[in-house]
Length: 202
Image: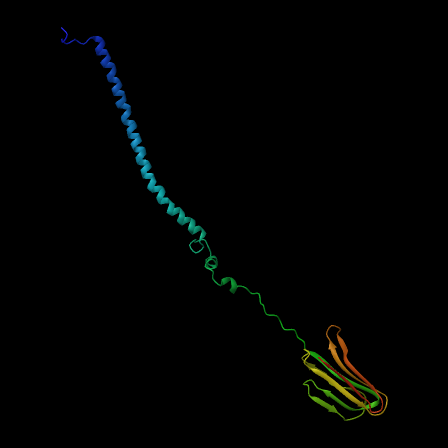
């Protein structure tokens, strides 16, 4: 009969038995692989916040290492310099002022005449006109005067001889470079009652 049930043979039973172990193998290895994949995804998801959270920390540590006001190892001076303080200018000891040059000068006057000097007129250290008519000298020498030496002082001396001959007036100044007295100006005159005059600005 065409619709009668066929009794399973030994070959069919062996075929089913061979198929069952294959399904068991797939189940045995498939579940562990899925578990490992799931755990890997979870670990990756857990590591993401950790990495993201470390970025601000590393940024903060980088900022602290470059900012001397935050870095505990930096000095107070370094922090002040970074803030643009005035410590740099306050420690500058270089002076822009120049020491004034001492121009003080010493002068004196002389008048010489072989016939004798009668009247002498000169400017003293204060610039006042003085006159000496006390006697007749062959060589008259004034006191030494200190003047500013900046060119503002007018040194002047004049003299008149008693008789004939030559009369010489000199203005002397002290030379610091030569370490001796030098003639700043000289006046010479000759004749009876001749008048000599020497004057210059010192």
